[in-house]
Amino acid sequence: MMKRLVSMALIAAFVACSAAAAFGATSVKVAGDARIWGNSWTRINYTGWNARGTTTGDPLTIWERYRLRTDFIANGNLKFRAGIRVNNRAWGNDTFTVDNPSVAIDVYQAYLQFKCPGSDVEFTIGLQDVDLPVSAPGLLNSSPVFGGTRAAAALVTIPGGAGLKLTGGFIRFLDTNKDFDTTTTQVADEFDGYLMTLPIPLDGFLATPWAMLGVTGRNANYAVPVGNTPRSTNQSLATNLFPAASLAPGATFRNAQNLYWWAGASVALTSADPFKFYADLIYGQGNAGDRKANRRGGLFLDVAAEYTNLLYFTPQAAFWYSTGEDGSTTNGSERMPSVVGSWGPSTSFLFDSSQAFGEGSMGLNPMGSAGFALSLNAISFLQSMIHRLTFAYAWGTNSPRALRNANLLTGVGTYAQMGRDLTANEHVMGLNFDTRYDLYGNLALIAETGWAHGQFQQSVWGHRFVNQARNGDAWKVAFGLQYTF
Image (cartoon, rainbow, N blue to C red; front, side, top):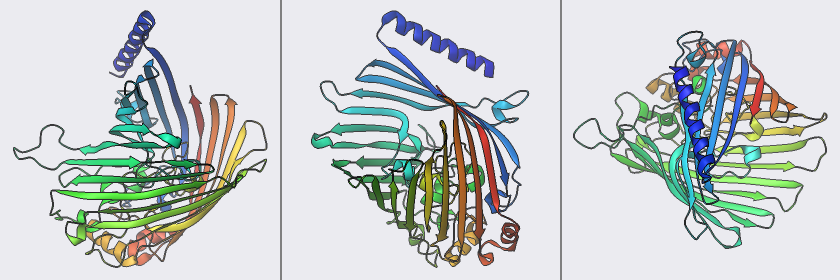
């Protein structure tokens, strides 16, 4: 079956290229990325177990991923992007088994992009990469609300004078039942979003106010794993959006649909170059018109700085703060809701924030935590080799009672997880040293190493988890190749 699908894909690509060559109407550009690496973990999740302590992490897993992006370009005003992938599959499993492999090729990009005739107004419609603004993508990676991923969306970008560019549109995050509901009565099984961003560029200064509305249907399936480390962090749309009481057995929403909203601003100050300063401020709220236990709302902020005029490295620093849970679960959640976040300072090993290799972080939740990170980035003493050294320290802003109640309502490791969600009496720290060596212009040898230590509260997580974490620290070594073409 696998060979048949690959053959069909090659035939389709050949036909498309032949047609383009024959008619000269469409040019085809192909690009891609392939990565093969091994992850060696000691005490993943600080315990060596999964989120609920029911399975043991393997000491070594070999992974492979593949991306192929093809652009069909009619002209500068019209193109279609098709992207397929094999996503983070382990050797000996799924696609890479010795016999009868399962098919793991899926579409991860499929969008049409065109400009309105006679104008520079641009439409991008289909499955595409979508990121809400963040002040410093190179330092803070991506938005803590929605970033580092893709969605089915219809977006329009309207350019204006003085470099202004308004982007707005519609996102369908979920449609659980597709075109037919499970009964003859309509049910609210969709989760939709509406966003707007407006970058305001000035000389040495960029401010980007933005907003997003979400409409959540109570019958949609929110138990969808999200993030790049779902196997270890047990993170889902449900844990990101709702309070613990909403996920307790028998819990219901009063309203068929509820409104979520986020508003924020990103600021980058580069006029003092080589000193550069960044900041983000976001507030989000959801389910305000539903039962009190189902409501969630909170604040997130970060500030960061870097100095870019040193010869051998770039020093970076960042601080973040997020509101945390108070002592009650009956009044909802005081953490800011999110959809799929990919925020993390200087690619810290503590956060899922675009490490070169998947399944490579401790999965710390920036919501309900505060902390700082210090980094020496882009360290280079030898040609074609760069390093990054990052230290991060985080503490919780959540009431121990709230996380203890969440565990009682849903089970330990279901809604809240030790090491991912921190109480005000807990802290974690992590150090990672990463190296990239370019063997060729498009082939890199990459090594990622990380160490993490945590102090956890036994009255919240139980002696079994906490004692296991006290027996040693978490270590990770990832080593592999990345080929871009």
